[in-house]
Image (tube, rainbow, N blue to C red; front, side, top):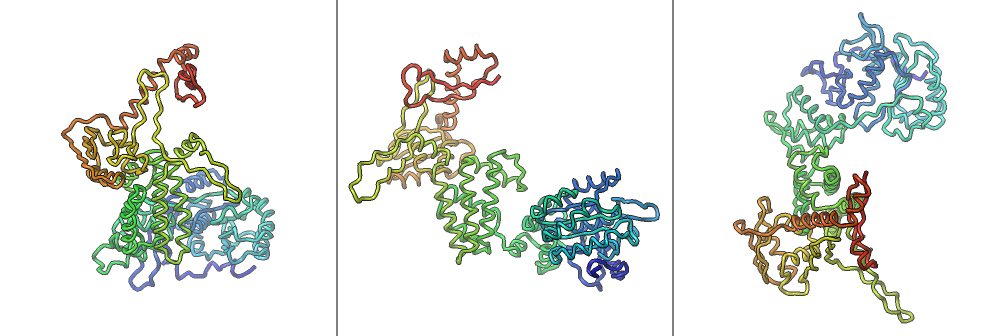
Length: 599
């Protein structure tokens, strides 16, 4: 058999004292330096972090004597696939003076443990399928499978990156995997599980090693800093954990770099040092950037992007952070503040407030823009210019109506009448629909429908009442300002070029200034907008919408047709009120309501 597959049990005996493991003493000052990823490689199953489900399953299987003949370990780089394979090989061949059986407790060193951990055991063969992909390499293994182990209990074959094997190599392996000798065990590891033939997968017990949670990985790094007598701020460790994307090996490699960032050994390495090392932009500032963009503040957004770039932020990393935040916004929008985002409490609060202004359709639109832009920025000759163009596209999208509203508007707007074209002239297209303020009158309700508000768009003095102000905000699509006015403004008086309101307690302090600035831009007249907490204003627009909705439901419950339906179907519930179609008229249309019964 090829010498690369079989390794002598006595090779490397002088290195036993340097075996990696969290419980071993640190290397002396005269020893050669060992990188953290090797020095703190897990030495027992208890040292594996974030893989509790796999360890529990293996422990139960070993205790019950139900040991599989083949295991498939899959997961991203650096989560511990090869390390786990060696631990399983040690567990299969575990033997001490007291124990001579497969065993998961590896704290006491067994007869074969050191040699297996060093990849120097004659009965444990390791093969890298990335460099040995042919059927001939597999046949060398299969020829030795039929022979009994030399010193261990089992012959264990560890094949790393197994997805790299050729089709003929997989086919040669199938028969042996189907009916292996009782003394042979196979452990496969791969990062590309989809490339492994299903015929091989079906013959293996599969374990998916998870990415390590950011907080768990940060705690692990903090513990290693303590063992190394290194001082790195926890915020910096959290940045490393985020950059590692769930890979313990990547995190330890980055920690190696971070420890030497501080010039003074007594001073801790701060988050800013780690951020500069990683080339990351400040995440809080990226969230500021996203808020500026989605609120339509173009100059503020571009200035923030330029500031992040000047501070060392990579446009690609900034765009990825924007993508992360849009994804977080979508999760918060879908499930609320309870979404598990791995972010600080204040960040989750900001995301929750921002998500209230948007629909899932809008967030999906932003995601697609940023996802497409990510490749553009990577390939652009000037990454900053590409990032600025992405930001402008994001701001333009934020000013558009939500996809849901746009679909309803298009469905309710008849096509424009187009006169016949003269011969030879290009075909005319219908004019695009303009945003309109729509009010839905309550069905069978005693309260009359509110009149269509005057937007004041054609009047130089702008809106003359609160309804007109709301309609103007809707028409201009200033989402952030519209949301703040609807939620926090109790109108007191609206006069030409003057508006007084009572702000709610948690209203933004600059709301009056922002509204005055926008009214000046939109109407051409300077408005005096006064926020006076001492005044007693009317209901907010949000409160009004809620009241009208409830009045509409109450009126529907009093409608004779609904009352009769409720009597006919005991336990029924009114869950939706639908307006009549435009072509329906008369008394029947006035009472047309859709009730969905729920027994």
